[in-house]
Image 1 (tube, rainbow over the protein chains, first blue to last red):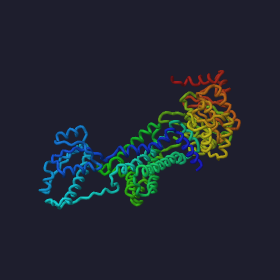
Image 2: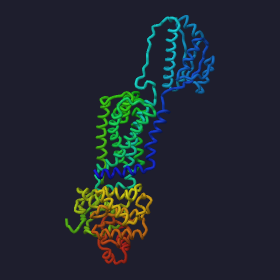
Image 3: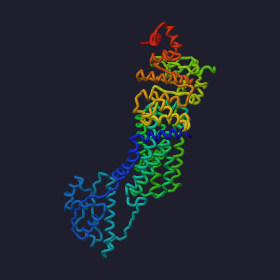
Image 4: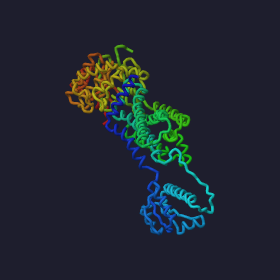
Length: 370
Length: 246
């Protein structure tokens, strides 16, 4: 026990004496949360639109005002032909053209039926879908409004009214979705990169040889080397959660202790990966490249940036055995849906098994003599 | 084991694939001796030493260090030896005090003992002003003297020094050897590899390694007499030349 404490003390001294470390530990999460959660967003706001209003009626003006009044749309220009309007599509000035044909109001009043057309720039398919959704919603709302307001009874009133409710992230706030994922990425990087490189550093500068002739036991060395990064990883997670909750207003519906419980086991998985990498490499550079290769793979396939559900079946199967994907899913479940221990139990079991296997492998690979 | 000898080696061999780095070497080292291991680069000195330290498992042959077997009792060996390698072994980003404290702790010294040792060493090496400085800011000679002091911090029976004086000036080397003598006076056995022939003169006995074998083993005086030359350098040249493939 004393030996482990002695190693821990030395590690903490070295880690915190490293000038790159403190900024890395504190600024990395702040920057990642700030930039990634705000910039990398699927959410679409301030959609600029053009209006081609050939009707110039009370109804058409009212409809346009509904668009301008919403948070999502900003009026770009009004013109009288689609051809003119198209210019601003090409210049990326507008993404939507609302075409209101002549007799828009008259048709509604007399036939109880009229039409409006949306022209959407669909270069980005998913964005086009979202714009379509928003715009259709506004028209639908306006539609029911004029039905009730005016006593006009349209021909077919039997509409099925679809009501949307966005659960768990009602405002479709991308930050809410991204912050848990970014925290997962952070602890994963700390656990695998920093720990692996820290051990290899001893090989690189030759001090490992000195340690190998001392009575330090293998397990003492490994615990002493890995524990600091366990603490740093968990500390980082607490820091990030606090930041997310108070600064970014990301909901935390579930128990923070449940998150910490999962994370504390998950850390052993990533530390095991770091340790294993350190046993097969000789320089920090090699360790970094190998860790980078695996981490990019784990993270891209881990559902942090793209949903696992939209991956092909084989990739989804792999994702099931990807600890990053499991932790990411569990984090979102707990934070956004308030999931309980019983909901994330499979992930917890998975981490326990995974960490035991990878640690065994790494410890077996680590040699004090050759 | 014969109690007189603290290291006994018989037919010790290490092969790396088809390359035989150490070829059936045999010798004994009595306690308190300064045993010099000489040879050209690549003669197998370091490999032989690493086997005795428990860092490398021999391919064949037998050896005991401080009474422990080099195959099965490497952990017991490690408690009883000190080691200083040619690669510099202190932590550059820790201070003098922190290094002493760390290695003292690794060898199981109590907190009080470590504190006492730290003060003793700082006083001995006259580095009071530098005790809170990082190792990387110290001159090489200081680092090596400190590394040696730390290698024997737990008062081992044997200390293995692998080319400890590489790259330092002659004065510092002389001071370093004074420290080795002091250790030997306290009955610490010193096992030292070097390729500085003047240092060979300081040893009680010399073993000359050539191509993985021990070509000669005796006191410096006897070796010079045997080869009819004046200096150890000439002994070395005479021994190394015939076998050289160059």
